[in-house]
Length: 83
Image (cartoon, rainbow, N blue to C red):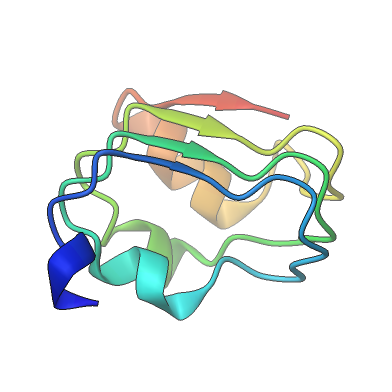
């Protein structure tokens, strides 16, 4: 994963993920993450804090709720989250 450390945009649509892959949390420079149409139900706040440069997160067509702790943590620091 070292070669992906400086990745800024990642599109993981329609992959049947039930959670954000752990490797994504190591991509410290990620600014846009597209996770549309997966099977994600939650985004843990303790993991969301590792996405400190994320500006846009697309979680449409997943089961994540606006009240989710991870969503709230990202929105609270200015990240745009699409649900």
